[in-house]
Length: 129
Image (tube, rainbow, N blue to C red; front, side):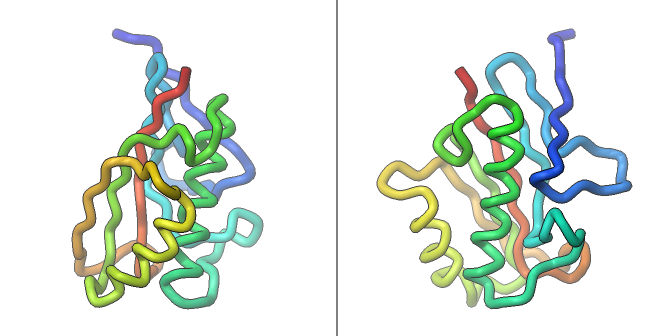
């Protein structure tokens, strides 16, 4: 089996649940799903879905950076989970402002519910050189 390395950082929310914040396998990093949770309080942030999208991406960037990457610049694939696709355009505005002209590949799906009843969650894959 390929060597795997769990990634843990105080700059992203942690959980008592049985999973790693991220797992690095060679040059690939798999980042667990994150909602808009403040890593200092462990609670979902207040605000609209755009604010929540930004917090989710900050959490993902923190895990990528801890693994030796360059934050969101190294993300190559994202899955977005929304509880209401009516918010899709607003999520895209916040998401696009974080990734710029060369965003990663992405999937977006509507789900019935997310942990802590947050409105958005994302997971990611990053390539680290």
